[in-house]
Length: 510
Ligand code: AMP
Image 1 (cartoon, protein in one colour):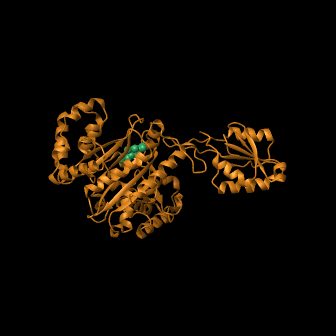
Image 2: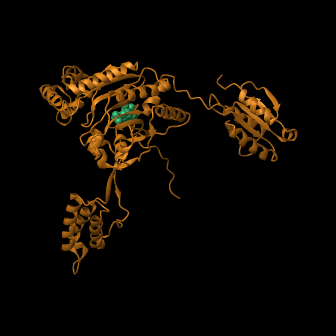
Image 3: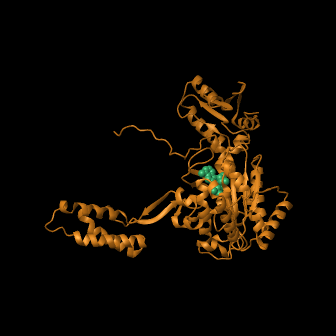
């Protein structure tokens, strides 16, 4: 027998256990309800996509793509098993055929490897008079080279879902649908980040995207209104909306150059990350949380002073549209998205109780993304992603994390522990349990007969509201005994009376 071994969840990923999972369900259900009233429908997306999709959309230069994605080669099923030395020539021929048929990538890297490997195979095979030993070193090199073949597409676990939504929008020709296409999604995302409170390697997002020909500021404001309506329905307290405009391809490049020039001047005073970002992505320097950089950043040029007339008008109108919806906000000039396709409106919502990871939601307008991914240039987009883990954490910290049950069990938990005694009572108990469950009550039915004291003790420990007792006496009399466990009161009722009695019973928490 194999040695016994215990397993733990991988670092940075976790189990969401009851009763917390009930809160997750409430959060997700509330999102469905609120988003539905704004005309959004759910899209269910794959967990993994071609790596190239994220590289193009999220951006090759970002931390997410450059170091945080879980990427692997999705090996083609047509590739033969790893070859033994004598099988190298046949294997290389098979690889060449698979490249020609497109089963494995016919790209520069594979073509280069193929050429190199073919030359070596020609030189070394057949062995003829020589022995394997005489060729040992060369064969070792050849086996390494054979390992360099990429035997399938490179795929990644999704680090975010906007790219997938846009990919799906284009793939299914949704631009032909009338009006704005409004989609929401929920599910796990994967980023290889350093785990800490509120930051995980498998985390969850609830997001929404509105895609279509219009970039009217009223759309931006309505998307934000929907988000806040959702938070309000959940009774999230202390949420603060931060907004900014980061310009577009007309005005931002000039601002970025100006920023870069100013950053060069203060370069020596910045930390290593910010120094690197001067070249790769100067906007991201504004994100810095480093204490000693704060004073320097405050003096940098602000994009709000460099917006072109169209972007300024768009931003002003977004603010007016928020105002007419009674939405308060804080302008935050340092709120940027470091990716080229983001433009104009960006926003973030922070919530209390989360320490340094206090952003529960990030969003913005990304008018260039659909075109970048091969769709029509006329399609504009705006969306957001809520970090569900952080939202749940904030709800719990602020005491808004309680979960009520359905109509038959306002406080959740177990309504009935159905204690049966005697073989003849079991079929009656099974039938009664089914009828109670059909009526919406939560019922625990012991699978085997237990002694009276033990059975009722378990009902107590399970915190059942009622023990319904069904023994041979009750069976003969056509009644059940009902014991209210909070105060021990007990009475005998016919089945029809039992249902109305349970319905009228106060919830355990009352
Ligand atoms: P982003 O896709 O980076 O704009 O993130 C959107 C939201 O997802 C953030 O505001 C966070 O609430 C959440 N989030 C991002 N990364 C993580 C993570 N590693 N763990 C938990 N939540 C995250």
